[in-house]
Length: 416
Image (cartoon, rainbow, N blue to C red):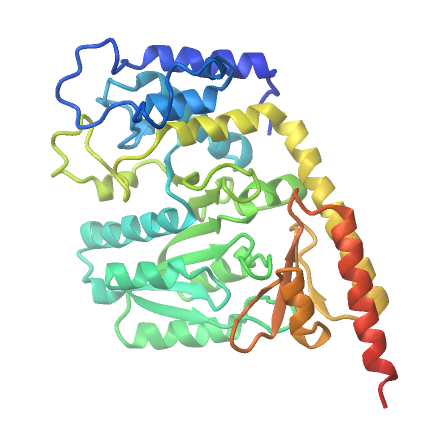
């Protein structure tokens, strides 16, 4: 993968050039659009610092990126300039990070990973409905017990039955025998088509589903499926820390991918990214959106073009090499936590390519977990607490936590 690191000046010039290609609410004859620039009583459009603030300038200009701009053909002409920025962002994510062939994908910047996961399920349900005449009760959504809550949310919204398979307790690996048993039961009950979610880093554990083990079973049982990769957390770290990853578009079984900018990229909320192979977005074309030039294919409809520009800016501020260095530095710091836990005899789970460490709850007091805001797997009866090594986590915080944890464990051991 390779995209260039750009200077701050070049990034700024590129964004302002894109804004100049958009139509301007202040100077153009725009009568029919139910929107405008941001309220000038709150957002000052004449603030002198805006000339050096491309993201804030995009926010104030308020471009609407409704629709899916990778599809080509007609599109809303008002925001052509910033739409091109979004298209280049989708290209970087699809081609450079996830190995897609040029022009073999579509995608857009969504409100977040939840929307992107639901978008995938929506597309595949309609695909099976339209192409095979499937009744919705013949379609099931498959995901593991560690999957994000957006999957049961998608099943609820789309009227799909869920097949939730278990994982092994200590290493969070796929329980393939449980999946096989439940698949056979679903087939026996009349299910014919399956939407399969694969996790590229679960939210709680950082675990990664074994895609080969799952697809081998699907093929052995002659399952008709579409496969989605939920890389909302792992998408901006795992491809940079594991050169042998097969959770990408080079894998012919993968049809779509979710990634989230607001996690590892430190971009604002509202910067989820949805990627999918060509010829599939069409199944969610909203024909009723006839006033939108080019129609709408997204779940959210109107969305901020500034968010797409923000993610594009972050990626080019680092470049592919710089981003890889940053992610591997986070892994080094995560490994130091694991080494300390090993020395203390603490049981934990850690995927070596992800910056999450999940510690078994019996080793950590509730007060210590609360002091450092560790997230439990269940707030009522936690079995695990997780640490996420994000850029704001300084070595001093980790040292303090490890010292307090060591003292707690020592105190437990010397009690009669």
